[in-house]
Amino acid sequence: MTLKQYLAVMFFATVVCWIAWGLVITNIDPFQADVLGFIFFYSSLFFSILGTMSIFVFLVRRLFAKGDQPVFRHVKKSFHDAFFISAFLLILLYLQSQNYLHWWNAGVLAGIFLFYMIFLWSAQRTQKNKTLEQ
Image (cartoon, rainbow, N blue to C red; front, side, top):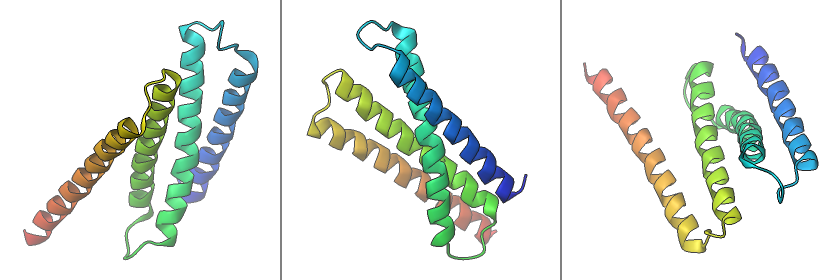
């Protein structure tokens, strides 16, 4: 799959997910919805944000990339980052819907996600340095 094909498919899928989220918003009454309605809401919003962030993070990575990394590495990293951004935003939204979101909860959650991302980054750097030494 070429980069243009990937971006076209990701853009099309993201638009479909945003349309699906819009349909969920307009057709499901949250006061009468059962668990399935909330599953549709959160899953369509998650995939919408995932696609949008994946494209956006990829473009930012490509714009500010240093070195000669292959494109598939940028795609992999951008999708990985977009997954965590989407999960973070959905967890915040869920906590807000349950009236559990406070500034300290958001700070702790942001810290957990930040430490996890730093851990992954440092583990990859350590592994990269070990392969260069051998």
